[in-house]
Image 1 (tube, one colour):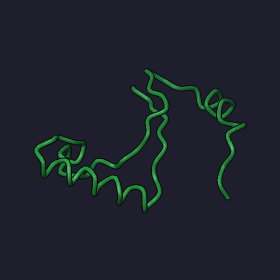
Image 2 (cartoon, one colour):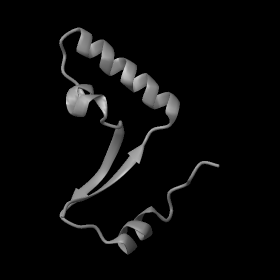
Image 3 (cartoon, helix red, strand yellow):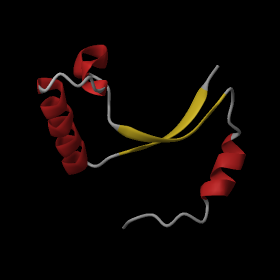
Image 4 (cartoon, rainbow, N blue to C red):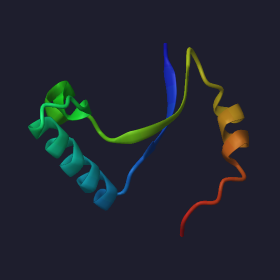
Length: 68
C-alpha cells in the first residue's frame, strides 16, 4: 500500500487555486482540475512512500508550529 503525508489548503486558498486552474484550462493548459471531474482536492504532498511509520511521522512533525 502507498502512503502519503499531505497538507490541505484552507477554504480561501482552495477557492483561489481552483479559479487559477479554471483560467489555465480555459487557455487550453491542462491542470489537475481536469482529473476526476474536478474532484481533485488541492494539496501539498510532503512525502510519499510504500509505507509510513505513524510514530516516525509524529516525531518528525512534533516541532512544527500549528496555527491557533
